[in-house]
Length: 251
Image (cartoon, rainbow, N blue to C red; front, side):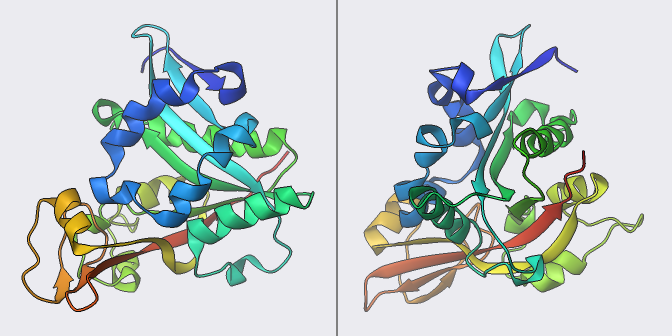
């Protein structure tokens, strides 16, 4: 295991530039073009800098993991968390902050680890640190609209069926879901409209390098579900489901 230290964004003015390589390595090109996330993600660093962290390797002098989160107020049962997932949560957080609403929980935006370290247990450490961040701010629980990392290998399988897949040891088939479960997380419900990308077919050609000769559903590398192409309206639409997951935060 590398010699890692936790660095919070508010202690590192150039944090985003130094960690952007992690973000670029984690997602397909089209995932950087969601209208809602593109409009609001900067608030993570502008309003909520003390909720963002990186795991810095003092030997290689580089960041090996990134954790982004934001505070949120929610006073209804967690089982009623909205279908809108990460988009709903981030927009709500910013609007609540505008109105001075006191948050009571922490919502994960993303956790990313360096590609060559993804079998080294850094994801476990990053989730544990995010729980610590919630505790340090007096917030709890930690909720996360989890993006299962192997769902893109099975885009035509419904999320409901995918969640039912188990290994021989009874744990989830999906690597990222196993991390959360092993750390005490529990799955609440699917949020079917967590992240949306919609744009012209020309843009989808640019992002994917694919051709779309007819209207219909297409399997795009990195997508958890098919992308719907409509030639008549010149729109390609991707609606990504995630899985609401909760971690209790104890003193």
